Image (cartoon, rainbow, N blue to C red; front, side, top):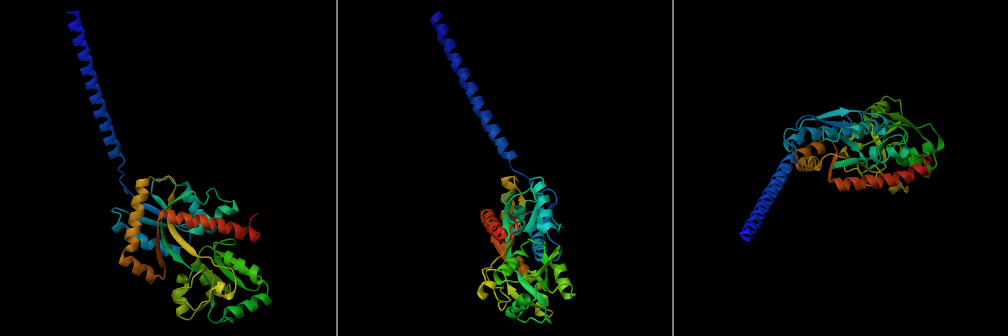
Length: 338
């Protein structure tokens, strides 16, 4: 009898253990299912602020507004609000992005230079890899413009003048000394042996206005910002500091074709604070990619004379990394940093 009772109790314990194991497995599956459901982030549920580090009316601002107009088509409920925060060669807006909550509701449409170059001066808390790239949006060149009635009709005539007249030629730069607009000319000064006077402006439009008003003799600008004024005969492009010609102004000579080792391009991308949930990053990247592929968007960029160029987050970060290394070398050679 005792033997039968022992066998019965053993079987009962095994059955109970199996029941508990089954309940535990079911509980784990339910928890995993709940976690999966919780990971589905509803985004966006409120307006998304897009910081632009330069004044309204410039190429970065125009590109941001085109994206803001069409992105809701591919990201339902998206409402992008453009906020212009010029100053500090882009560092004011980018510092705000750095300090923003990483929830996907604060982004920045910025030139790579504002992120790759400014940390080299040691005046900002962020670094070149402090952000989450979303997508590259467009690329551009930079050209030196002067009034159409200026005495220099060619680069060679202009170069002859600045060599013979140190510090007499003044030119506007968006972002100030040491900015991406200033560096190419500073490099040319060193290689060609002349001195010119850079004048700081908060954006390209005010720099162009200053040229037209005779307050400065020239300005370094993205060609899209001056296209209409060049075509109407009010401004002239003297030289291109980029690595490739301007598609619609191929007659403006590249400095590298004039024998100078200066070739700096201007790229613009959408960035978020680091730490934004991966699901939000994916949603934004996919929506921007589809937006950039939209024929209407391509027409808008072409109309604005901007060269749309999609690039994924890894590609953008590589470009920023490479720029940081290159600018560190240039700024040291120019004596602007130690």
